[in-house]
Length: 475
Ligand code: NAD
Image (cartoon, rainbow, N blue to C red; front, side, top):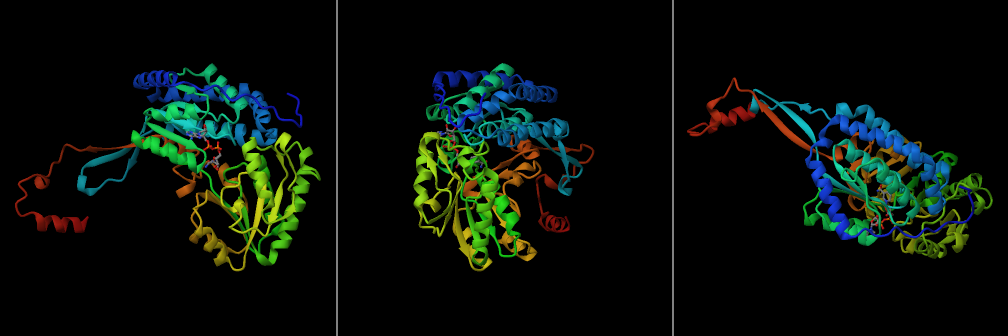
């Protein structure tokens, strides 16, 4: 597909009606009850099938994401397709050991015995994805759900209709819908899905819709994972390597045009180095995207008109240091730095989710920590410093989902680090083994030996209290 400066707006996917949703769920219930997904070989084969499906559809997926919001191919490969391929490789390599019941230490109270944790699938899972990483955020939880032996219904975002269509087509071509199915559609489709009883719901999206999902899940006591957003700070202290900090902040902020849940939302920089840091960031924006970022093939567009208008309205907040250029026809907003911003400005009242970086300052590190703690616990936090004591101080006194010291975003690329938020930025975490654990019910089983059966525990208890006290102290 030729790369152009225009964006194609595809029609949103047609909604899926309630009857279709119900009948799909019935099929999945029956399939799960058949026990096929409990089998390790079944799971491995299907995960390999998914690997093949992605390989076959790779170019189509890259084109679809470009068509949806001009997501640059390199970014789309690294953060969506390549990311998922690595996740699949890791799961395929380790699943046979993960599924084994894990033996745990005994309690002497139960002597003689052996205790195990079995990882059971929940059953039918619902995975609801947002638009900003429309492939990765649908497939990563799906891999976890499949690895753990669940059936899954995935709901791609209606705001990326091209990607939604390719993913749905890909899953239909490779999987029986009684096992894995994509349900396309907008809000009413999600509402139909949420009315049903699922065994697990995995939602990625806004905090506002996260609450709707959790309310619906409560109706059926369905466990949920919520992967939400928030305002993730990038704190820069005066001893940091400013050039490196600027480069890594600009990369993490302007990738995907700032539409990344863990993008640094705002800068919290020590007053004494603010000017230097701003100059470095301006220099890197130009180095990355040229003098006119609108012409750069490496800079994405804003997802829709509503978000374009919301983001454009922030451009009058504070003082513009670079950027600020917009083009409604192509939903372009230049990489922008806003200086002299306060928490009273609208840009600081909600998650920005766009290529606008407000600059706030602090005098002493305590103030920066206090600022972070005065607000909701963020999904990410990035600290740039060369001072170990400062590092320890920030890590010990701030609470956030995950983050980096001297980098942005990169923690998401280590599958050994559980990925998730806390408080308003979410609950539950996944990636790698954590995904398998998240989609598994931990069933605890004690196997009691039969060769010894002390009469102590059985009534009549008579005067065993003293003896029992001594025994518990000794244990
Ligand atoms: P969103 O909450 O608007 O939509 C997510 C999904 O919810 C979509 O599939 C949509 O169909 C559905 N939905 C929307 N309104 C609904 C309603 N009223 N009732 C039921 N379902 C509804 O989120 P978005 O705009 O697609 O994504 C952006 C948000 O997602 C940001 O807040 C971002 O921080 C967050 N996010 C979080 C992560 C993470 O991993 N924590 C990753 C990416 C995005």
